[in-house]
Length: 566
Image 1 (cartoon, rainbow, N blue to C red):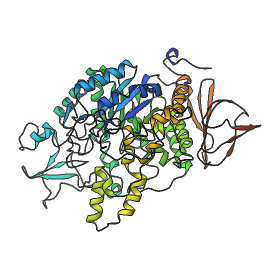
Image 2 (image 1 turned 90 degrees about the horizontal axis):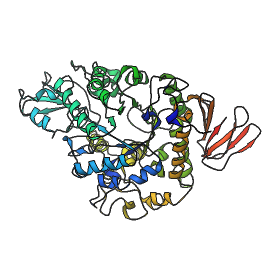
Image 3 (image 1 turned 90 degrees about the vertical axis):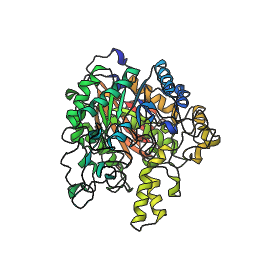
Image 4 (image 1 turned 30 degrees about the vertical axis):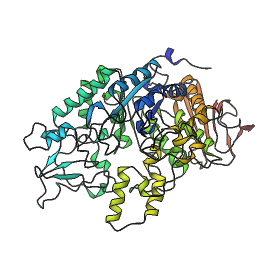
């Protein structure tokens, strides 16, 4: 039995309010790595426009476009020089308008990044701000006098392995930057700054964009006494910087002044935010954000210093159970396993051995598309793209890597092999390698020299090959999206983990009204038996051969996924 979501009541059987952004699937595009249309080695807006049918045919309803704004690219576009101008490398505003029209013509929606914790130091506001202490734009940013010893105002460090304060010789004061020196933090205490943000949001919403992914939004409010960081936060500074004293006030003001006047979707990047704090951000009764990206899953294999460590399946499963328990019917969440800041999911949570890559990619995409929350598919995961085998620090583009390596050298640690070995597990450049379209030169991404080297396995892993193979990850994901749309239990259903301690199987149910769907995922190469509750069910979808069932026992092939209606 299928269900027509359009004709369902506005409140589900278990009390969730139905919304288009809950029922949709999002596809994230990192523009510089998606498709180059003019041969300069850099992805661009026209390249994206030329691939809209590929995205539409996958079945997604929303595209998230990572930053496309004018930028000097100290941090790949997250340092914005002009919020109302398109990055020259990506095209023109006319190109953006054409892309947006193409998205709308295909019945999809477009959300864009909102990066307003900081700007580029080349933004007009900052160039004015640093001119003098009495400049009208001075208080657009956070400036402080040096400490008594002439050093920074406090001991804060940036996310990019530097001091969070830089001395500006022109005025003899320090400015705050929680990221790179070229990314000064805006001063949200200043109502003029907030008004500027509301204006730039309206600029894009009036163009027709359908919402925002809000970069590091919990960082916008700072304790204005700027105390030194307590020792208990030294290995987790993001939790000290985030959720400042007026953060909720500012986001609620954003909702009142801007968001409430449009039918839009908002998703915040919840850096430094606990699960308990998440509920405050996304409870629909509080008028803040629709959902946030929580980082429990993508931090599963990291220690406090960002180094890789092994993990076990029950740890992953417990995260989903914790989220289901903490977020009630008034809250909504996201589901993602890759983005532009993470390694590739199949190399991280799956098995990228050629014999198991496709099968494990299907298991991961099944998990992604059958959990409660809006699913976000990152470009290339629908192909099962893998990590790149870096050999030298010089191969990385990421500013965080460059700064960390400089810090290592200053400390007298020059073991490049060990440093790169860790990055081969953890670097975000893995997800930024160019999209693999064909088996040709540069994977069909560009006719020129790509800005970041492409993965050599493009000859085997590419979109053309996937579209020619009915058993590819691409077509499996398309079928999963259609199944999710047809069964509201996979969107709104209650969640129960049936085998929380099993080291190889992830088995859970989603229940809405009289429908219960069982999802059985084998996270190993072994054939594993599982007892089906109630004895038997109808297999709606299987990523591998239909499992053999003898009595109540189901034998699940290695790295396989099965969705069964009980």
